[in-house]
Length: 366
Ligand SMILES: Cc1ncc(C[n+]2csc(CCOP(=O)(O)OP(=O)(O)O)c2C)c(N)n1
Ligand SMILES: [Mg+2]
Image (cartoon, rainbow, N blue to C red):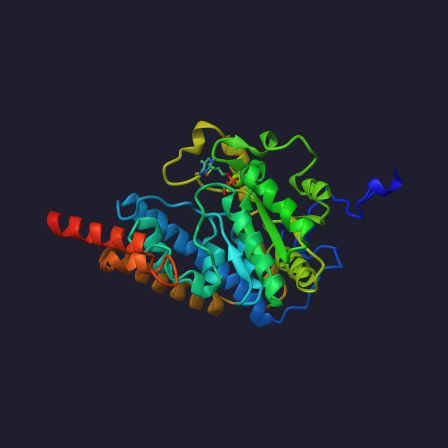
């Protein structure tokens, strides 16, 4: 009978306390193991990326409120999780986002105008992402986990040393697809990291309703992979934890489940009114843990921050906001026929027929 038991125990246990390198008051913590000695340029770049993300986020909301975008899902409050996690990766590592990952998109060099095209609902919204090793956003919750694991397994079989990062929300972890993705990644030792941004809410459902276990990261134990909890509002901790997990995956060590504990400061999307289901006091509590304020204080203490740097960043952010606005309002749509050309390497006869039908229909309507 002993032969029937393939694995008797898992070497992984999960620490409830999130890893933190910078305390909410901006002071360095006593955590030593993951401390990096990042050069001032990298620290400034992380800060700048978070500030620019927030400024653009605000512009996206303004544009939606003014009727220029169909919808927008703000990442306000989650900048550290996204910038930290994406900031330590190689450009050849693949990102599989959900839909709230503005910070990660910007780090990857996806232009704000490209994201404007997505949220405006233009024909070409989402084109150009894969050129940057970023999958298109996935509105159906959890589905992209499987795509991410598949991509990781492909890289493994091709002998490439790239890593795939799947961004998921706390709510997404309750989906069947997420279970399949986590299980598959683990069984096949895929070079994949799951970054679960636990922003406490899945629309109006609190995270307490997503699982009965101690934390989301504890799920990792059942899959036989390390589960790590990190303070998702601490950019340095998110950077270090992802860097470790990516290195492990790259070296053939298999997947990691990271739970970044953070907070969605705004509504679920511009269509939502969170005052109907959550307390102002909760939002206020998280405001005191703001990732950008915290990191600015840390940089001030480290004498990396200066008024001059802040001004330069503010100017750049203003310019990018203006460019985004201009592109959303004034950029013409591409020829719709081009959409069909991008589905496969070579267009299939079926798609060619659909393209011709649509082109003819649009010509009749014109
Ligand atoms: C399969 C599926 N079911 C339901 C929805 C509706 N829906 C859209 S977003 C969302 C909540 C997702 O929450 P979470 O994964 O925590 O991500 P967050 O929005 O908080 O970033 C739901 C249920 C959907 N898009 N897809
Ligand atoms: Mg959520």
